[in-house]
Image 1 (cartoon, rainbow, N blue to C red):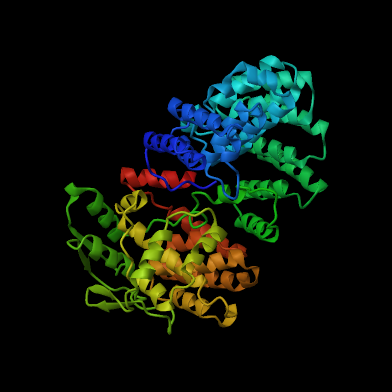
Image 2 (tube, rainbow, N blue to C red):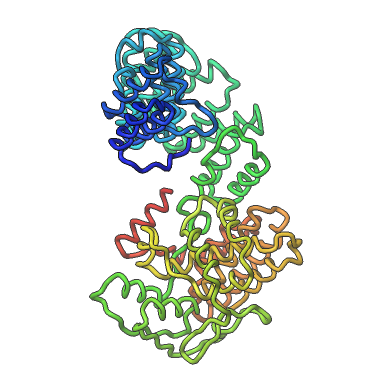
Length: 604
């Protein structure tokens, strides 16, 4: 249901509609009325003009608003009102619900014919129940507060229908589901309880259980869901609901028992599989459960509906759902200089050279920040960790300059559209990065050393308070773009594999983390590469841990988090990673706006 490209105010659209009607051009007039309805669906003048148009048509005007192809929302709503006027209100309600699904925050149904008690008397209760269920399916659960007022006409219809049919179980349950979604929890409980008393059923108990759960009455919610299972022991979605409710209340062992019961009946039942992997990960933190869930999703592309268990489990977790903030004295000084004008630009004294990306970011974002390096401990952090690795940087005395050309303007623009510090889960990040698949290798490498400015968006302005975070976003997405480079080449001999390995074993830098994340992501989406990636992760973390015994390694904590996000990691490496993350937790930005950004990302 696309938007229309008209931008005239509703009053002007109505004026043009009247002129067209005066000329006898009713179809032209209908287009202007539809445009006015889309902008002002409750304006009395709009409905008066629509009624005049219907009268002029002589047959009710319904055919002036055909539903062909992707109908314009204004035409859909106009047809709905004319159907109701023609004595076909149920069909009209179906169209209003479709409009609500298109734009839930707009009061498409806020018209007298929907809220009048007479409508509930004219409709069969089964039809009203189905309409209410369509509304529930069209909106989020729960409905955001800002959108709830637009749904009050449907709640009024529910009230009127329940008054007319006080013992209709299906109607009471559907009304309860709608009331719960718009925050009327007590009303939802009353209606659902009346429904199961009038007509005991599985779906009625589920509606009652959901209502109790929304009210925080867990014991009663579990009892109702248990009765639903008794009605239909083969409906495994209810088992998953019970497991989720138990887990949300800290009863993880009981939750897993219910999931195992469901899987014993059907090991491939999608809801049970998703919930099982999420709860197992919640129990022991082993990323293998999430990888198995990602595999299941990939192997079952035709699941009946979308599940959020994988995204929920990865949300806010380092590298599973977001980039980790950089660490080190240069970054801390840079954040302070950018966010606190009173702090000024001072001098940062280092016992060892900082990562090249940190030095370049500081030179760009705070050119007055002085950085003094008092020594170069062994092993030299300015040298690649393995010979033959690709060089992105060149040291020029105390400064660092890129050793690769800058990317094209097109490459920079395309990456700015994609780069974000958070993603639902690694496979989703991989899929999103396909937008960079056509970039040349030189462009992708250029983006690593010449990151473009943050976009002029709300997110870009917040990220501008921590230039290091934006640079890390750019590098992460550029490396994900490398995963899509020349995918026709077999992995073992591919350019993308070799380039990423070169970057992983180059100088200690933020690019090391970005490249390793790309390899970890490859292991998430392709089981065939997991053994090699696990070996690379193990060797890179062991190298960082060995070097850290003689000098600081700023990227070591992030490499440890990356290791814990990697599929097929051996227990010894996992233990080493856990030790490193325990001693160096992920930092949180001090800026209040950046802090709010990170809290928002954790809720995404």
